[in-house]
Amino acid sequence: MKRPIIVGNWKSNKTGADIQTWIDEAVKQKDIINIFSGQIIICPPFPYLDLFLREILKNELHVGIGAQDISPFELGAFTGEVAVEQVKEYASFVIIGHTERRKYFLESDELLSKKVVQAKRVGLSVIYCVNDEDMFIPDGVDVFSYEPTWAIGSGKPDTPEHAAEMIANLKKLHPTLLSLYGGSVTKDNVSSYMSQNCIDGVLLGGASLKFDSFFSLLQQCLV
Ligand code: PGA
Image (cartoon, rainbow, N blue to C red):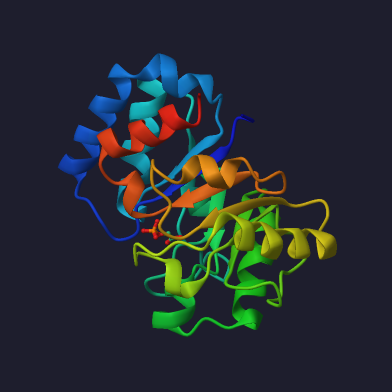
């Protein structure tokens, strides 16, 4: 099987102690993790980007770091926002347009396009989430993630065949972009997505939180 891109989005989960535990367990499996040569990308909450970066450098874990969101503004008087220059000190990737940002924070295509412009200004790679084949993907995106809203956190994933059809249609419009499938991916179904030619990787929520279940999923990608 091809070596997939595996993005772990920790959302608003975990404290520093939980993250330290996850890293300590990951370090014990460093040889396996490093087989993925940087194609594993973990997206911790903002306050822990620094901790995560320091730990992976210290332990020589070849894991990419992503932010879960970004400000649409430059550095300046925008209370509560985190600007691309600040994220860039820790991360190489950023998720933009996750369903939860669209649903709970009412983020529009226009706002999301501004975030993409900011991210590209400092050279962050953009992972852009869409819920179906008709959704707008702005210029500058590097990777799109197809994740039907009903599949996220529900335990009811899309079928690999339907996900592949949606992703193939998106790739017709955006042939240079890499693709992910997200929504209730687990160790038991990850192979069925990765065996679809047009799917380059997966975006995990729940399955990335506990290191042992995350590691079981990685092992499925090595067989
Ligand atoms: P889930 O989340 O794996 O918990 O369904 C996926 C996502 O948020 O993209």
